[in-house]
Image (cartoon, rainbow, N blue to C red):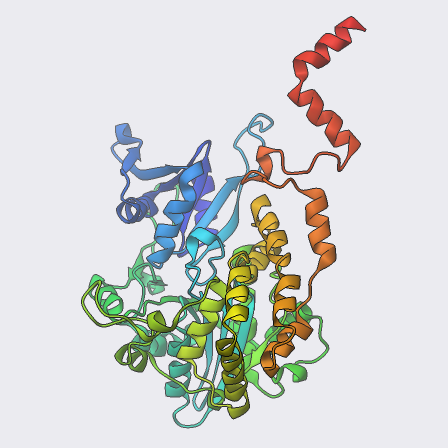
Length: 494
């Protein structure tokens, strides 16, 4: 079993491997030491009688989500290993596989992300006078890329990265010295970089230890915490940034013949960054990420660039006052009632528009809603029944949605006709565009209402998800399961 564990661990370096054993997820060796410390659970050991105890710790499978969330917030990467074979049918060792890798930049589950904050995975590549960067929020499908050139290209792309405040940064190994120097004081506690080969120790059957890793020092993490900007650094092999293969991946994903329509013609560094970013997200999630349906290219001059120091000094999103005192600009302005609105307002503050037409359109919509308090209050009331559709759609496409997520989708879509009607007589052009383009998705609402019960359980495996009357055979099986004694008695009577 330990050889099986080590083989899976070799396939997923730089992660804490949660290894399924019955009703528990176990961690071994150095993972156990790190996991016990960070999750604040008991560290035990196996094979104490042999004089070479193997450190281990474990958490119940039903509570694993909370422990994983704690590790992800500290910057660690977690690989979830499940039993993929029925133990009762296995002749020897149960087959196990890593079904998902969760990293700070690819978290999608509700308990891993804050409703009002974006979770960006960033990628940066290039050299000399040209650098490209990409930003992907896998939880919502937002995907953007940029490219800068000139003698100050590195400084400008760093400013873009800081304005997005990503949770994780991908980069080619050839850029490792430059990236480590730039982000040494903002690296998250769990960020790891492999040691040089001569300092590594490969596993053998006679060696119970892990290959060591170089970790960011506690002092560096303290500095990151003080700055409010923590980042997990993830080096990726250089060959995975090859522009041609990255372009092919993007074309295949979007079903396009050319990247010209995305503004990426001749943007080699931007294409490489976007391709590497998307590949990493798909591989960690073990899914195609179909909800990532568009890629936007932006120029640095499309918005006002505010670096992390400027945002902190202006107290845009976080107050510098003592704990519990003072308020940031975002806290003062944020009267949103949905997570989607809160994230959009946050992005507008961190990356203010410099396009006059866009600014005037927003001001016109605000003025229209300000004049009509009845309309504004009605829209706010309707939006309170709208779930976070961006992240809900992401979970559906990633295969992690629950039955209650689908019911929440139906309830949210039921508000669309009422919102359109409320805004139908608005004079502002931006509100008119919303009314004209909002799709009521009647077919989706009808399908969910016809198929699912009104109050389904959390998990599909708990049963009772499908509405009675949808299928005669299912109703018959459900009746037999529920009324087994009466069914047997009827058989005996016949």
